[in-house]
Image 1 (cartoon, one colour):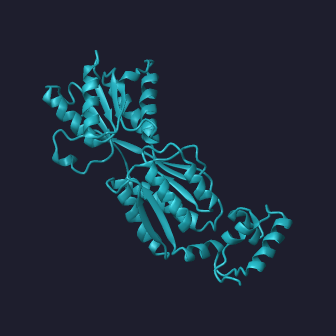
Image 2 (cartoon, helix red, strand yellow):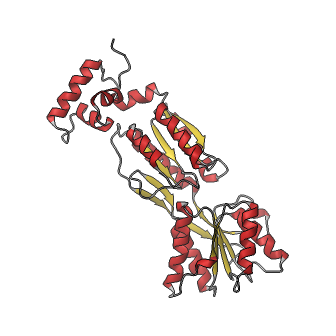
Image 3 (cartoon, helix red, strand yellow):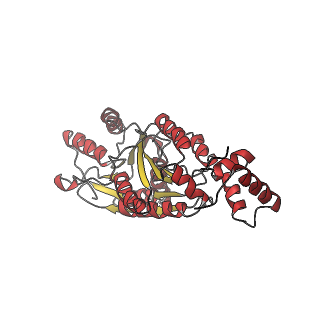
Length: 340
């Protein structure tokens, strides 16, 4: 008995070929051989495939027309803004956005992706968990014909569209400014060492050091979980060095607050003794003294780029998109914790 909801996924499964090949064959794409086109058309007729709306649109309808946003949490303004902009833009097209939270754990991220493969949403947007280093679950989405877009925290080697902040340039600019102000020992307090964002920040600082002909000193880099206890130990370590840092770049404004409080207890002045810069925006900055100097990306622009890319995916009719990377500039906001 023929089903009424046959999609190109069913044809692909029956023939053992990719969804994109079926889509191209049905649309008489010149890159598909006549033999493959005939095979696809024959199987489509056999299964009772009815070409009404686009094949991709049929799948969207059968899945409830959902775009999945997988991110660590909504504590970040960037993720909140992405959700706030995606939802109205896609809802106007009859597509809803469903948010899933990995809790910054790769295990949870993999479980979410496994379920999404079953659900078959229109597209999946992922900001990877901080400890993700095995990306095989991404392949399962692509194998199922589900478009994937990586956002903010990405795997640069994976061949899908990516939207990132230019953290490398932000780190390079801050470190260069420190060096120009006389700093020679820049301490770096970052999160998980395999996290692509932190890797880019460290590369940026290293490049600023190399540019002035100095050697990179790895003892001035600490990677940790960024919880209060880990940050406390990291600060103690930095201050125990024979030559403590004379400038600091930290992962988050909250870490900068912790550092400044600790330095104040030790009568170390910020920024006179140790200037401090943090990555990310901080909504309470205007209420504290000294206000924290930060390296920020425009969350609205990141979200706008994401909306544009998702909309491009939705009109591509299942055609694979190039793995190009959109890089959104960062900006250094100089406030009370820097510069000397």
